[in-house]
Figure 1 (cartoon, rainbow, N blue to C red):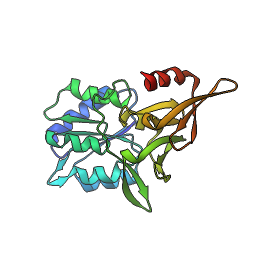
Figure 2 (figure 1 turned 45 degrees about the horizontal axis):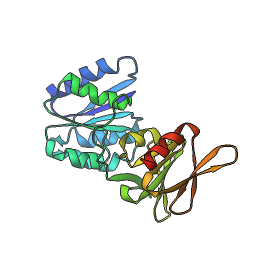
Figure 3 (figure 1 turned 60 degrees about the vertical axis):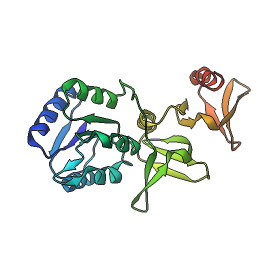
Figure 4 (figure 1 turned 120 degrees about the vertical axis):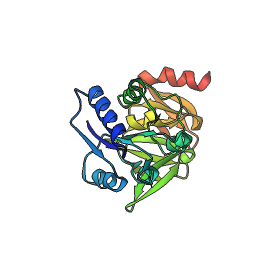
Length: 233
């Protein structure tokens, strides 16, 4: 993994570096520590990143300025900050976790386990998905997304008005962030369960979800029972 730490307090940065190295011992490729927001933004532009650990107050600069411009990227972001009142806003912008200062090893490891998808999020408050359009970041309200289709390392967001947008995060990473109303019906589809009108069974035991817009999406055989239980319980 390639990990970037953006933290301006030297003492705290050293603790984060030590704990991060200990946790990702066998999977760590490169770990970089930077103290300023601008240097962090430049590093993200020019390097491949898997995880960003971000403080929100960096010598007076606001970490949200970075977050708003990078939340559409393929990597996960974990906020480490004393500003607990900003946790909700951070989750709304799609961070994986918010670790309040002061923190201990167990709390940071919990966040790291979520990176590896070993621990689920207790609260998924994401309200926006960020996409890049003509070089600019645009926030899409999660309420307008009806389903998400996997497209290799990327995903395609499909909106209620028929518009589609590419997103840099994989389907697996978005599944970690999205609220429970989105359910995995197929290896390539995450769907808002409230827009599924019915389940259709075609010859050969092929299952399809009929959406409220009459569109049909495939249902994986291993996911059929789970989806049926969610819809009718």
